[in-house]
Amino acid sequence: MQRNVSLDVLKLTLAVIVVISHAQVLMGYSDLGYQLTVEGLFRIVVPIFMMVSGYFFISVIRTKSLASWLKKVVSMYLFWMLVYVYFWLDIPAANSHDLLRLLRVAIMGYHHLWFLSALIGAAILLYMLRNFSMKVLLVWAVMLYGIGVSFMYAGNYDLFAGSRVDALLLEAWPYRNFLFFGFPFFCIGYLLRSWEGIRQLDRRYYAIWSLAGALLLLGESYLNYVSLEGLPHFDMYLSLLVFCPGLFLWVSSLHVPGDSTSLAYYATALYFIHPLFISLFEALSYRPGNMLAFLALASSLLAVMLLKGSRKRLGFAFGG
Image 1 (tube, rainbow, N blue to C red):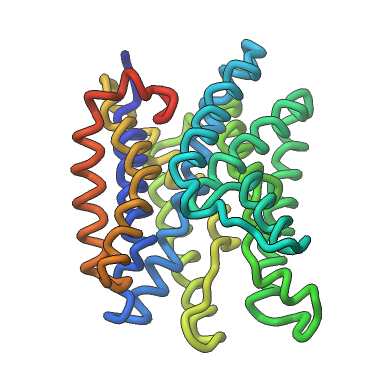
Image 2 (cartoon, rainbow, N blue to C red; image 1 turned 45 degrees about the horizontal axis):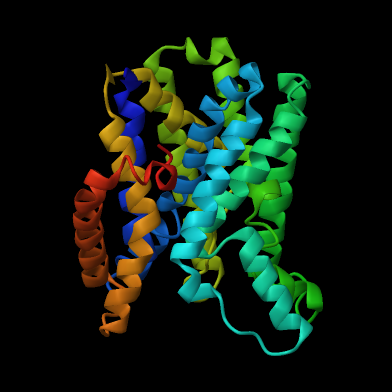
């Protein structure tokens, strides 16, 4: 099976970044380094994963095979929610707040599984809007992402301090969801595949585009670092709209043909498995930081290699 190996290498690299980010590499070692990487550059992971998914979603739209695509992704979501059920299925107190929280987690996903929930919602929405022009879709994508970023910035900068709105915006789910985060990048990935002209540029332009985006992202992260006390938590940056498409186009333009299904498996499996090992080592009293990142990454990679033989039986769990 011929694939673009460069994209699968990118996905595997991003999966490694996810592991060390969730283990909070550099925590306690360098505040600025942590801010510019884990809370800065490493925020490209979910947007690019969404863009890759949107890029290949064009085949679903052309063949009108949304039902089969949904069956595969929903099966993945249900399987991994079951794997992590111990961590999220509390027996709630008899009050509406706990019941609503439990329902929200069940629908929007536990921890890293919010990605699958957002992916499902983004795909359904794009399929519904598929007959709109590329220009209209791009406007919707940028506008929705801008709203999400506004929510996150308003929460971090306490623009509604002391109000219920402020408490709501300090949580992630109002903006980190399919509408304000998933759909914009999923749609951009689809548009990059649909717009032939954007993929015909010289590779050097993509490199310059990526470099400019990376500098913008570092600058935006640094400005938040100096403006807010402590280490501000940002999932979304405006500059991701510049950096992520540029990096994606540059990597895809390398186009190394080959059979890289194993790399794709490693990337997917690593993404879904790693929180188990982070939780294990935290239970053994390892604190967030470099050692936890190393142990979690090494253990997750070993587990992924051991599970490779079961890939056919568990193909639905890894997107196979």
